[in-house]
Amino acid sequence: MSQSSPVEIIANDAGVPLAYIVDPHWLPSETTFMTPGDFSLQMGMIVYGAGQGIPAHVHLPITRQVEGTNECIVVRKGRCRVTIYDSGRNFVAERDLEEGAIILLLGGGHGFHLYEDTVLFEVKQGPYAGNKDKERF
Image 1 (spheres, rainbow, N blue to C red):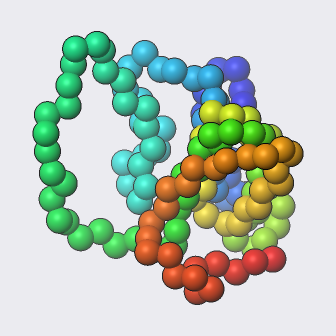
Image 2: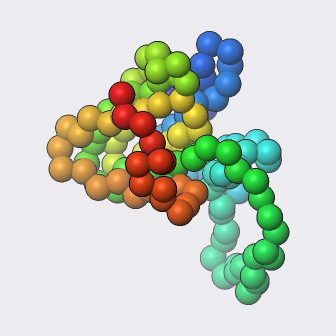
């Protein structure tokens, strides 16, 4: 991760983002969304002061069309290495992730190597489609 940005964007050769990696130590002083507004899975740090609140609300049943599966993974415990590939299964990058790191996987392929006992918290679009959902390589 560069010193100037708490978020590293890993892209393919055409500049299409494949992953956003958030520094595990970054705590912004104001609400900051890292992803553009047109992404099918939004990622941001929401910041409130003591005594503030979020009014009770419901999310309206609007229809969204999503192609593919994005995943947001938080390293809750342990350390791992993520390997990122483009849609042609070509190696793009490897990064070590420590406890507290967040990665948003947007496209292409990826794999993980676990250095130690590790717990990953994952959020993705569902429902999970079993063998139709992914192809291993």
